[in-house]
Length: 538
Image: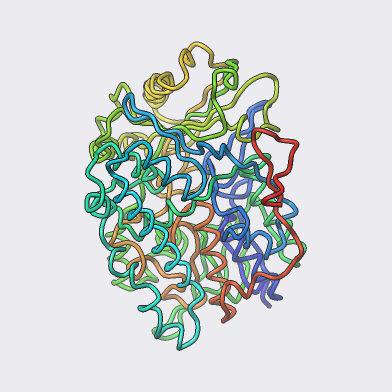
C-alpha cells in the first residue's frame, strides 16, 4: 500500500508549489523537509527581535497582472500573504565608484530616467528596453505550449527570442550602448543570477531584468511567510508536510533495463512508498546522494560531472542602532561596485585571493525599512551579500556546522571587516554602530539549505546549462521528477514556476489551468506607509 501518491523531497518554493497544485488536483501529497524550518532559501530565522531572510531580498511581478501574483491568487494562498512595495522612485540604488543611479518602477519611468542621465544614448536605450520587453513577452508564451498548433507556431511567436536570446548581455549592450558607465548600470542586476555580462545569455538576463521592471516587493514577516502560506494551502487540500525529517535515499526498483522510483528511506530507517517522487534538491544531491550513481546512465553521470553551479556568496546579517531613515536610507536595495568594469569584478570574485579584497562589491537591503512591521527595539536590520568563490572555503569543506576547523572563525572575521568597509561607502560609520553581526558562508548554505558548493541560484545559468541543456523535470528514472532553481530558472519566481510547470506536466494540462478563480486578492502596502493598502494593487 502506498503512503502517498507523491512524495516531495524538500520544502523549497518549487516543491511546495508542485505539491500544492497536485494536492488540489486530488493527489495524496507528502512533503518531507530535513530542517526544522520549511522553505529552503525562502526560510527566515530570528536572533532576538531581529528577523533575517537569507535568500529573499526582493520579489517582482506582484502588481496587477503580475505572473507571480496570478499564481498566489490562483492557488488560493494570497490571503495568507502581505507584501510591501519597495521605493517606486528607486527600488535599486546603484553606486559604481562615485557615480550613482536609481532604478524607478515601470519601464517608461526607467527609460526616461536613463535618457535624462545619458541623453546621447537615447536611441540605444529605447532599442534595448524594446528588445527586453519583446523577449520577455515571447518567453512567457512557452510554458503554455500544449497543442500541436502551439508547438508549430512557437518559432513564429518567439522570433526575437530566437534571434537575440543566445547572444550574451554584453553583446546586446555593446551593439546599442557606447557609454561604459551606462552599460554597467544596465548590467548591475547580473548580481541576481551571478554571471558577468559576457557569460550570461540574453535569454537568461532578460527575464531577470523583466521580472523587476514594474517594481519590487518584500514579504511582511520575512521570506518564511511564503512557504508557510503554501503549506497552509497544501494542508487544506489534504496534503501534509513533515519537518525535521531527513531523506536518506530515494528507493529505486529495477525491472529489466528500466528503473523506477518507488519511495524514500528516511535517515532513521523508515521507508515510505509512493507512486511518484519529486526532488526539490539540486541535481547533485538528487542523483549523487539520494539516488546513487549506480542507478544512472553513463550519459547522466557525464552531465553531472560537467555541471557547474552558480556563484557562492557571503551574507552578513547585522543590526545597528543608527537611525537609518533619518540618514536618507529607504526601502530600495543598494548596490556598491568599486569600478564600472563588471567583468573584472566577477573575475575577482572567482579568484581565491578575493578573500584579501579590502573593498569588495556588495549588495544590501535594510529589511526593517522594507518591512516596517519588523522594526523593533529601535534597531534596524541589514542583510548584505557579496559573491565569493567556494574554493576560499575548501580547507573547511566537509566539516560540521558549529565544529569548523581552526582558522574558519578568523577568516569570517576578516571577510566581515571588508564587507563593513564597503557598507561604510553607503552608510558612514556603520562599523561603529553594529550591535549584532553574524556571517553566513557557502558552507552555511550547504548545511542549512542543502545547496551544492554554496551556489546561490542552483546550477549556473550559462548558455550550455539552460533550456534544452538543463536538467529535465522528468528524469531518466521512471517516477522521479525534479523541480526548483536548477530546472527552469532561479529565484522565488523561477522555482515557483518550475513547481507549477511540473504539476501541469504530470496532470497533462497547461500551468494556467491549475490557477482557479479563488476570489483571493493579494494585499500590497507601501513600505513608506505600512498602514495604508495600495488601491492600485488591491
